[in-house]
Image 1 (cartoon, rainbow, N blue to C red):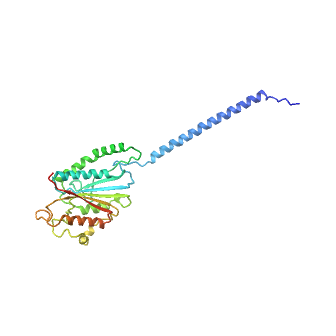
Image 2 (tube, rainbow, N blue to C red):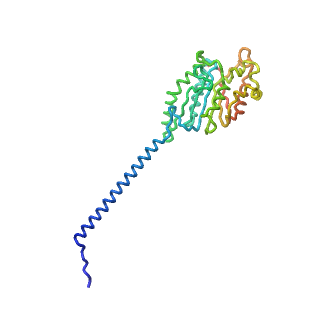
Image 3 (cartoon, one colour):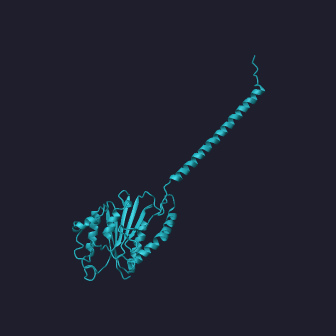
Length: 293
C-alpha cells in the first residue's frame, strides 16, 4: 500500500519563502555593489589617465620629440628682387608642409634684434599630431596654425632683406651651424633631423670673408686645416638631411665690383664638403637665382 505524501507544514513553507527572498535581495545588493566598484575603478582609471597624460607645451610640442627641422635664414643677403622674395616665402611653405606630425620646427635668422651669439630662435612650434582625426580636420588646423603663427614673422623676415635697420651686417653661417649642432633638442637621439639654410652661403665674420677677401675661400680640406677652424667646427651632423636654398648672383662671381674671389661652383663645393665631413646623410642644393620678373 503506497504511503501518503505529507505536505510541509504551513510555517515551514513561509520560512522557505523568506529564505528565498533573502537570497534574491542579497544577490541584487551584491550585483549593485560590484557595479559600483567597477564604475569607481573606471572613473579612477580615467582620472588617473588624464592626470598622467603628457600634454603639449605652449608651442604645441610634446616633451619627448622624435623629429626636428632647424631652418636658418641669412638676412645679410641684399635683394629687392621679387622673384627671389617669392622663392624664399615658398621655401618656408615647403618646409612647413614637409613637417611630420608632432615635429618641431625652429627658425633662426640673422636679423638685427633677433640674432645672438648662439643663434636665438626667431620662432619655434610643432606641427599638430592628430592620430585619430580626419585628414580634412588636420588640414584645416594646420592651415590655421600657419596663418596665425607663421605668416607674420616670415613676412617680416623676408622684408628685412631690404630694411637697413633690420638687415644683418654679417653672415655668421659657420658660427650658427656650430651652435645648431650642439643644441640638446637637435641631438642624434631624434629619429629624424633636417637642417635647412636660406642664404647666399657667403660667410662674413672675423673668421672668414668668403668671396670678398682673397684667400678666405680655399678648398674645404685646406680650410679645415686652419687653426681657426677648431673654434667653429660643428659637432656631428650624422644622419641629418641638409637642404640649401642658395641665393645666387649671376655676373657677380669673379667680378671686381661684385664677388671677386670666388665662383658659384667653389661655394657649392665648399659647403657640400663641409656638411658631408660633418656626417650629413644628404646635401641638396636648390638654386634661387636673381631674376627681373
